[in-house]
Image 1 (cartoon, rainbow, N blue to C red):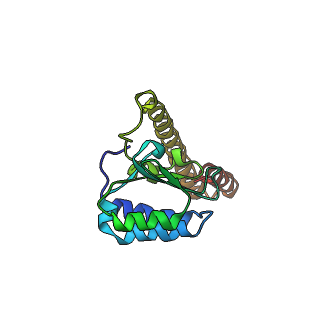
Image 2 (image 1 turned 90 degrees about the vertical axis):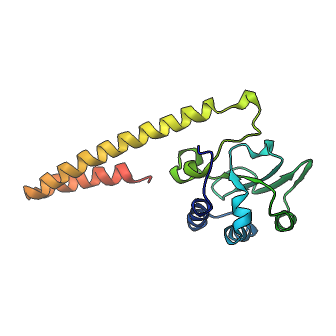
Image 3 (image 1 turned 30 degrees about the vertical axis):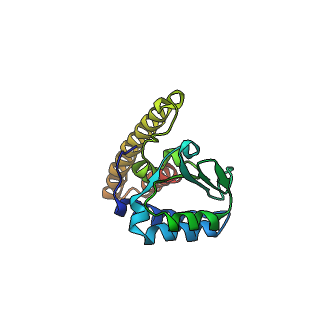
Length: 182
């Protein structure tokens, strides 16, 4: 998790996210597009885990998540009305907003990991030791996959050099299986 993310990194991430994920409510897309269009809002936008502990937070869930589709929290107010949250954000663009995105395999998503910041409002009992373990597992898994990919590419090239069609087909199938979920 980073401690500071640039506006352009956040915008790039949100554009990528909008292209690759669908929401239960189409107004969530409108809200994220509004964020992208306003640099002051983007400057004060922070992606965190467990946003419910933050003074002003938005929790958005994609269709592949079992979490609530949308929540806006500000002080003691909690609402699922996206329009109310939009108006609050539009009228107070200088206020920090903490955003949590719920989507399938979010803890393994490298793009999300790069823009996610430490939650400064997280109670001591929930500090990120668990997060560190998750990210360590992610890094190790990525290293293993990259190593296997490189090895398979070398063997595929060798099979091509030797005109060994049978081995080539077998190895490309293995490479496709390795990269399948990515």
